[in-house]
Image (tube, rainbow, N blue to C red; front, side, top):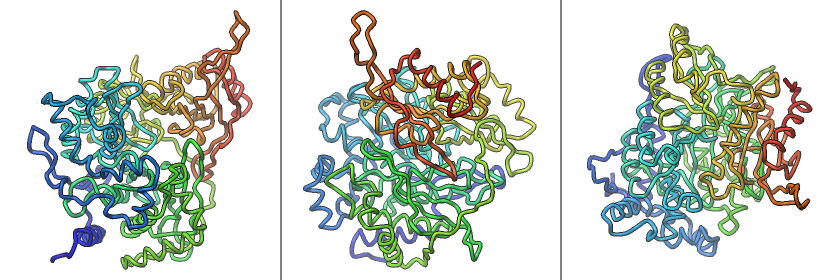
Length: 606
């Protein structure tokens, strides 16, 4: 078959991909593991860019003329993308690495717009304020599922950067971020990712971010939808080029802003759909009983506005075709019509509000119908109303597979050393067929552990003694979440991870609370630590403290405290601070937190 243009060929291949599964399950029953779509793998140790990357059309070429004109007159980021397309990073990063390795240039000579902007489209975020010349490298881990070999590769990749600088973070999107990465080392990592069915391409800046799904997919006796195939299909939609079958899809390489998608598999809503641009909440159709999703839209957090997702008045069946087609339609309209001037108003919620919910739904229905894929959009269906309590992920719990258990392991603030990565990989190989699942609470789950091996797992030295990794941590320690903080992030006003871990341990020693208490830390108002969803949220902010010698108020590291966020079916965001300008020093902050825990959560001092 011949096509008059690459764009038409690309569209036809995208449609074909909907009817043929590019990802597959291997194994059976409780031992099933999901393997992402195969990628072209590197065969050369000199780590050159795949030649097909240079043949791809630009991301800008997919934009309507009107959108291009708005982008040309748009904000600083838009003008950078217009000057040289984001897809250039797919090739340029290899060339920069080669020149640096061969002594032809240094990282300081990399074009500034590439260094600080375009390289984000291959997942590389320059940490210029904290570690100049080094990057955070963000992956895409759909549904948060990795394996022992991949985790070891991550540890090996950052080992050269030392124990303090070469660390990994589990993120609040079930994702992995590597710290300390240098440009000259990146191609080896990219090729290693791609040979292991992973990618970092299109994981940063104006891209569709990691697909969040249920960490209990396929092993949950209360599961409504297995999210694994859907997350992988969505990941392929946005980051797999259907023409070349390589990572990096130019059709989604020039969005106006980042875009988040979450697919929930049960009433627990472990994916936190209410803070995503697209949230898919499982719900059967009231008349037919067919399982599907109520669609919520527009949830996001930013420095200027935090918004909870709203009912889109849409329901779709929970099949691959419907989920991918709806998402593609929303993304097309978002890409072509959203704000290109004011980045603070470029998220999906602003576009939905500009349309109006009913009008936006009508536009989506029309777009979906134009694809002619047989997808039917219904009105929102009534959600289940029977009593339900959100279940815990840490600890040992039975699976739906007879004789199997899942074991949730706490990773303090999501930070992993190289040694801890290898320890988890060892445990996974020994007890869970190598499979590791990540949670949005920045912890890990080992699935499919034989019940007769659980005691042996719990007795492993990697989970006992001085190890930071624990199966049954305290109610506060085990539910503490933190953003990167000032150690690596130039936006953070305060250090978060070290403070969060230390203070949560002190609180567990000082006060008893009868349930898991979720305390989230974030270093700045961007709220990467999602403080508004927490029982108690701590956000870095200005504070003043009296100098005992002079009596003057001096500026000190401080925070604003949020109280009352909720997750699950009854999700709610705490949008206004409960207290403001609290100094971050232990002697100031801990008494404040103890009083909040006592007054709001029934805590009792020990």
